[in-house]
Length: 310
Image 1 (tube, rainbow, N blue to C red):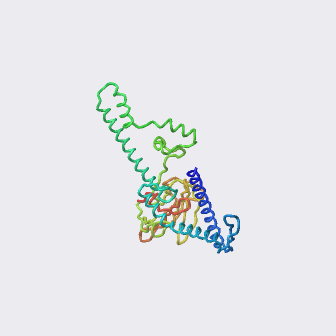
Image 2 (cartoon, helix red, strand yellow):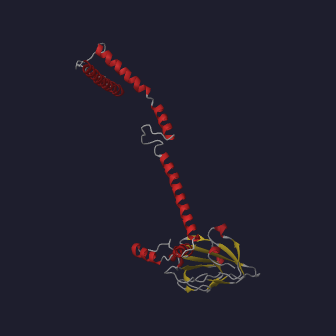
Image 3 (cartoon, rainbow, N blue to C red):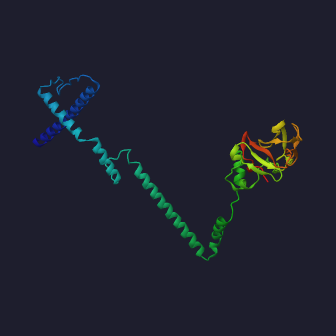
């Protein structure tokens, strides 16, 4: 009986100590919160429900317990805890692992390396299996050997996949070889393109003007339409000569300037190589200059890139 009474008494004392420690921790937290927000601390009741003044024994005990709790809290330096946990994570231990930090990075690296090793092992196993299969000279091995050779040497017929893609998505998948090989629909044959002046020489390139070029041709040389199109503008005369603008397919326009004479009018239809005018004739037989420009979608481009200049 005495032994049972001692055990019971120690259990009660342990429970009482735990309750008092919890109450002291609550008091410390309440006081800290009050100081943080500028409030006056509120006195809490003692163990028997009576307010414990600061100088009473109960107050001293409570203050002593609060001091011990604050000392315990101060010993747990957050920076030290972080360093310890980080070091433990880096070395692969698990001291109460928490999300964040290196917790998610290390498994990712390990998973990547593990996946690479698994893929390498599987590839090596497949290679050895295929090598061993082709070393076997048995009737049952002829069929898989033929299928492997066919898969590695012959192109896959993608027509069925292309038809399904067209029906499902109403388009043509460019990643399938069949669509890269077949011609584009809706486009006619390429139209001829000719030089505007025969045996002309570029004396001022596009890089100098960023709008057109100057071509030197023989005195009175014939000027031809570079491509098929409709004449949209004819103007000029006098010292600067005539200018002709022709609109072509695909948003392209060609400009012919400094002509000595013109043979076309607005809204005339001309074919590539048709005469539209002539260069001015010089008294001494020297060469005349033709201004030639090309515009695509409203922007000037280098005529040498789209017209074969002699």
